[in-house]
Amino acid sequence: MKLPSFEYLRARSMEEAWALHSEAGGDAVYLSGGHSVVPSMALRLQAPSRLIDISQIAELRGVSLADGTLRIGAMTRHAEVLADPLIARHAPLLSQAAPHVAHPAIRNRGTIGGNLALADPASEFPAAVLALRAEIEATGPEGRRLIAADDFFLDLYETALAPGELLTAIHVPLPPESRLFGFDEIARRRGDYAMVGVAAQADVAGGVIADASVTLFSVGFTPVRAKAAEQALDGAPLSPESIARAQAALAQNLDPPEDPGFPPERRLQLARVLLGRVLSRMEPVK
Amino acid sequence: MKHLLTTTVNGEQVQEAVSPRTSLADFLREDMGLTGTHLGCEMGACGACLVLMDGAPVHACLVLAVQAEGCTVETIEGLTETGAAADLQARFHDRNALQCGYCTNGMLMSAQALLAANPDPSRDEIRDALSGNYCRCTGYEAIVDAIAATASDRAALPETKAEAAE
Image 1 (cartoon, chains in turn orange, red):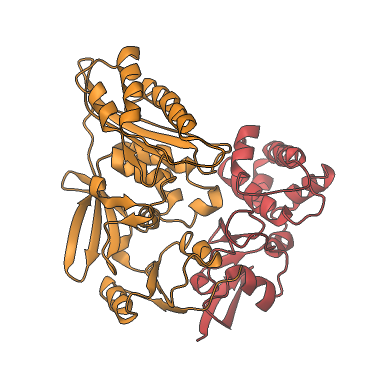
Image 2 (cartoon, chains in turn blue, yellow):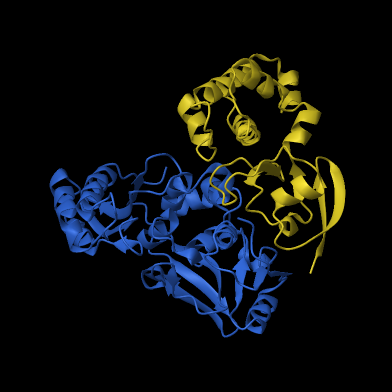
């Protein structure tokens, strides 16, 4: 369908964006790539009276290293995430996730900040930032704050962002040399919504796993950290036995909702199979 | 309220007053009369509306016309006029890679972008690149054939000609 009517305003600074948002009394949505906002309006899932275009704000752009973290500006498009050498070096889960995010033309416009702010539970980047133990930088009139990814995804399409606050960047802690990464998903066709997906990382030094991080997506209302599986891995050698224990532990953290034609048991089984595949193929940064 | 949009379409700078809710696709079709850009789903799923924006394929149904401010937009009419995709179009014709033709604009845009980034794609890579383009007539086989054949044709060209074809 065609979009409902709205007022379009371009913000040239964060201050201007907040002011325009507050002026609309909450009946406003920020527009960056527009690849979630525009279809949601076409489908009448929302009809804000004002769209505030934030794509020209300089602070939202760029990928850089500073103070032991990788800072990825919110306006970084999916295609840029896919190609960026700093991201490939320091946050490889995002590079591995990017080819699965929608289709090539969508990746040319969609932005990682918009993707995380939407918090679609079937989306790849939320699970990847959770596994990377990244922090989400949110900036509002009261200042800037960093929100741990663990505390960011609250419920279906619900995040810890306050009304009017801008998601400005993602901060990823730099990985040690010993870190291994793995990402994969099961989908009917490349770019389709995943039936289940896994993002994992772990430090393996002297043959022993430490700091395992295992997240799944498309298994519930938010991306899910499989903490019992992480515990099954930590302190153990990376072996078929420890992987089997992690697979068996998945049910402690996953409780997939009822879905017509896709029973929860089947999704859990696919999650176990995929987790085994991902853990046995984890690799260091290339 | 309408906004004055200044953008470049198929090499020509245009200025038009557009309302915010007008998609780039509707702007191209209705204000510019460029009806080669087709609208299918109007929600970014079918790929019939792809155009090149600053050189990269995008869904013209998901871009607001006002967001094209200062950008370069190329439609299938532009690609046809410059002959940049003439060999690809000829291969689609030879291989009968269309029936109703509704999806063809988007297929050509995706194929053109794929071959620019990856001149020697495997059939799987071609299918991945077309994953956002629906065709309800052909079953895709002929489309993949036509793109693979164009890749071979372009690889066989002397370098100067290959560059001109880009």
